[in-house]
Length: 202
Image (cartoon, rainbow, N blue to C red; front, side, top):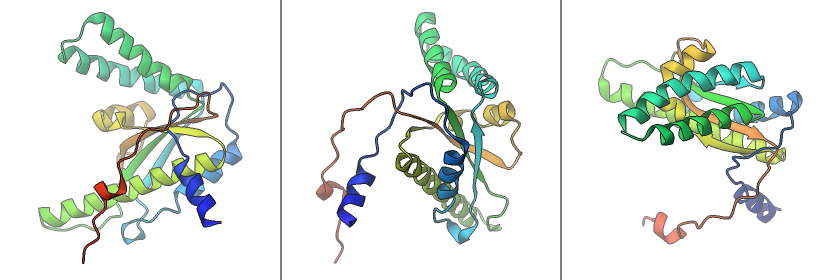
């Protein structure tokens, strides 16, 4: 029933705590396959996924990002104790997640224009396409009974993420998802009323 589907889609929540249970490979394949069915500009499918399930690569990424994060926090003039707390929390989120997926954008197959206006528009279209795949990934994980959370840390350190994971040069890290079996039930957050965000134009 359509109503039941709408209720299911609306029941997705951001999950930050996971049970220490591995996610099956077949399940991950289904989730990623569904993510790639998202709409994309010119059907170029500019999304790329770096999937981390092993402790070694996750720890490597966490340590690389922590070095960048520490420099940024020091520039914010935070205390050493606060910096240490935030660094540990950041590393633990990566290390403790059963699955970490870094969502990237690849512009190599998008249209090329000689002017800045259309170049920027093309980049925006690719960004929107990759974001659509990210949401589809989260909904697919939800359909499998998994929880997930979308984080944007890679936007602050794209070169660091690429170096840590040895990604192809054309892969631009855009987001990082943590997936696993939920170990929390977040409260339902208040949503803005539809009349505040919708305008019917006549």
